[in-house]
Amino acid sequence: MNKENEKLTVKPSVLENSPYPRIDIPQGEKPELFEFIEKLPDVKTEVAPLTDTTEELVHEEKNKEKEEVEQIANFIRYRAKASHITSFGVLIAEYEKVAEILERLEADESCKDIVHIKGSKDTYYYSNQTMTSNFAQIAVLVHEKDYALVVAHVVRDRSKYPSPTPIKHFCGYPYFYSDDLLDQIREVFKTDPNYKDVNEFKLKNDMEYFYSTLSLDQRLAVGLAEDSQPEESGYWLL
Image (cartoon, rainbow, N blue to C red; front, top):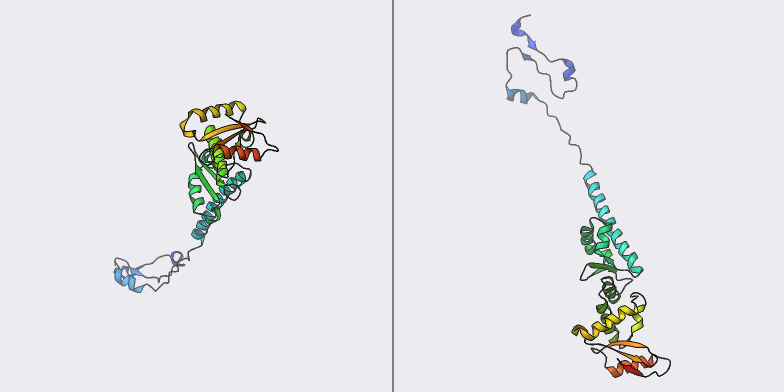
């Protein structure tokens, strides 16, 4: 065979699955690139369609975020139903990403019942479906152990009705104050100018009451207390 006519061929096994035509290149010759490209057939390249994987991942992430919000909201609702506020400290002990979740919760229309109060020591959450704002405020003060302020808040609020407040009221739920603690609070009221409006009196049957001069005068407070008794009791000022 004449070497000049010898052709360089590629093994058929290499070209079996090739979409391109077989080109025989004589030995010693270099094919022109453009000439080679022109001989290539038009091959339609099929691009694999985008899968729904990305969309599914986004959907799953949103579902997860929604579940986290609902979990926090239901936890707060459960505690509010049992007359408990929920502090940020309690939440962060249960959920690491609680700050981020609470931001989403505040923007969630289905969680508009979850509200919060800023205390002096922490932020507290509750559901206004089962707890009033006034009770929540008292619960915050009780939780933070600001005893004198708790009593003053209740006395001032009740005096607006108008109604004096039995001092023994604070021995029960949710306060459970001892007699010694109540004596300390009474001393605070007598000496601290922040509580100069909170006064007290005692009826002849030894029932003791607080009232606030912001809403009640002495005579009206005593009269209301006497009306609440089974019989006229009289009173002594303290």
